[in-house]
Length: 288
Image 1 (cartoon, rainbow, N blue to C red):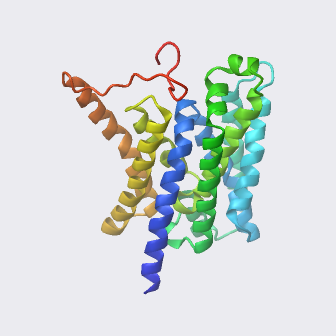
Image 2: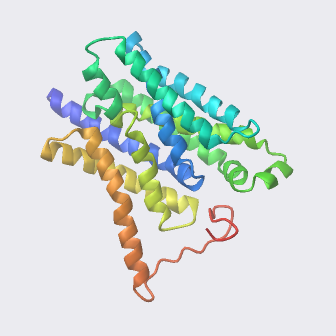
């Protein structure tokens, strides 16, 4: 088997793992309306990834450290009187990107490496990257499965969760750290800046078809993994950057799903029922 065949097989595996990882976390991001935080995190993680690359260590280490600092900063600033989490997120987004740009400027000839960090280099992933992504996928899936009820309860009814004895800020922090680890794990596939599309778009598309978290998650995983494979095919077929192709494939899922959802509802008797009850229902009391 040639080196190229090995690289393609690893790229396919990484695309499938990243697509599934982004999808399961993306469901929580979408239903909790954390898309802006996720976008900010992709930028704010950038300096840690750059620093790790400059030091010659695993980029995931730098990304996790930087992302954790940013997440704690958002939580801390967001809880201060008169200081909204959105404002704190926006400030840290700009600061993180500026710090990353400053670090890049300290080393000439970093352009090629920088491109891989920003948009990914899925055809260059190694066995270590696959193992890391697989481990993160297993851990994140376990966290969301074991603590899914607490995360949902604290997110949609904070007052009720507090009355039930749940430490709401701690559960919020757990969710934000889960998003942060996911972003870092997806760097080899789609880089820091493009990860947000693979996280948000499949889940947002799946959200159009159901109000039940298990159903949304299953559809999101289907959309995410399909986007990864479609992006790789487009990259090989038309010689475009794999990370960008995967991102575009994921982004196209949302408008296509919106169109199909609208068409299904425009046909009498063919609309997809979205009424659901129980702990997995993500609709609010007013039905939104």
